[in-house]
Length: 128
Image 1 (spheres, rainbow, N blue to C red):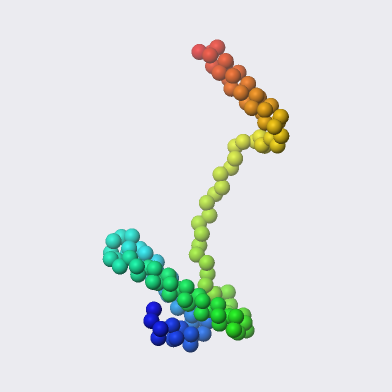
Image 2 (image 1 turned 180 degrees about the horizontal axis):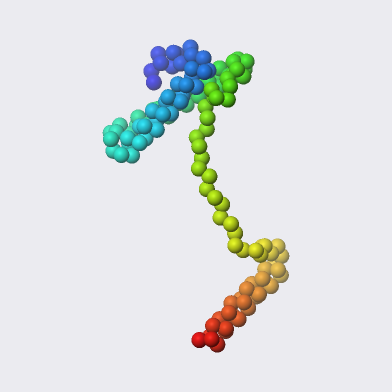
């Protein structure tokens, strides 16, 4: 981004800057896709777009700090929405035992688990 472009960004208001940021993020996603599919030869283009987005974010923050009244006027629909994160279901633990807290409890738990294994193997051997 050239110096003239940066001065033009400073002249925009917060609402216009946020729309500019959205536009740049869409452009970044397209460039990343093209790089992955080997359609784009200039792999540094994504980096420069990321830097431009950071510049716009900095200008937005400066304007919000300079005039907090203008930033309050933005409604939720006008603000940048965070990217949707796919929720991954958590694995349900099948263990019902809790971890022992003392050394003696650890020893007794190890003994009981080893005894269970021994009895299971004895049963298998007897059946077999």
